[in-house]
Length: 283
Image (cartoon, rainbow, N blue to C red):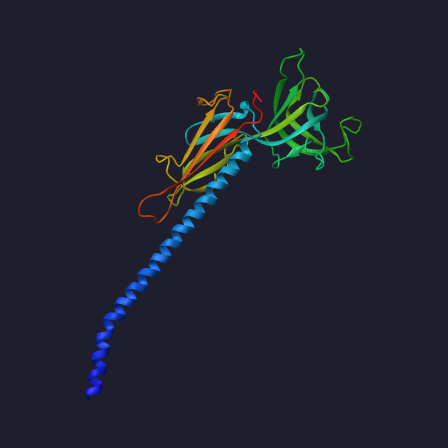
């Protein structure tokens, strides 16, 4: 009987100790989980911000000042490069431009960054009449792309693959000089927006000539527009900020900001990137 009473007393005495040990273990586990979440958030933010910088730099670097359309603190609109080529045969009057075939061994030839589509912008540069003056751009819209047997006798041809024919919407009044550079671009817009989940993202949209397509998230979540989750500044060659639509853009400064989730005191991860336009006149 005494032994039973002693065992009961020992059990009753151990219960508070077990409760304390259990509480400590739970606190340690919760702390470890919270720390893991913070670590995941930091690494996730770093990946997102690096990705955003890479996407923007890749799309902005090939541009020329005239490709920039409009901008605000949280949005940037421009003509994104779709492809480049060299005219090898152009008759007039006609509604097509034949450009050299793409050839992987020579990066200076025709190359497409993405698939060309109807209503893309096509620009060809006419040779200037007076020495020392700039070539005159001629702009039209793309109707379709097809292969062509043209340019077989062109001295610019160095392989036997077929040329690429750009069917365009406007009639070419006079022939383009052989060797004329041709650019295909598409109007795009990057902007900070609030999604259905309540979070803010950097989104990308493209224009097909009749309207904008559905926004595609690029990176996020970011801070809100009021907290400057995204900040765009377009500058000239002297690094002075430019008003929207200015014709002498030379570079774009970009800043992304993302908050760490689950941190009591709000900590913000930031990323800065300066992208110089390769086609500017001062190079």
